[in-house]
Length: 75
Image 1: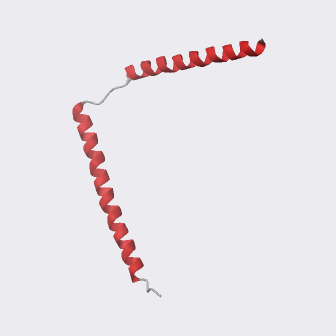
Image 2: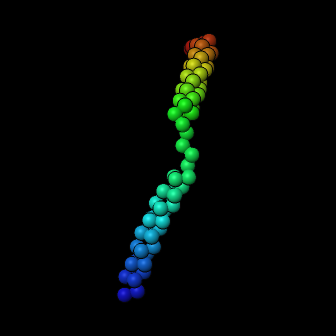
């Protein structure tokens, strides 16, 4: 009988913890300062431009590595 009581207590604690987690999450989301549309556009442009620059850079590095390996004589 004690075993069943412990299971019930564990389930109650688990459900209470889950409810507490979600209610705390909602409270935190109410405090969040969401970016404006203009800020969001600026952030997106920064991310896209960074990705493009890094892609070009890594492409050039890859081409350089391929050329170095092509200089190695083949047997």
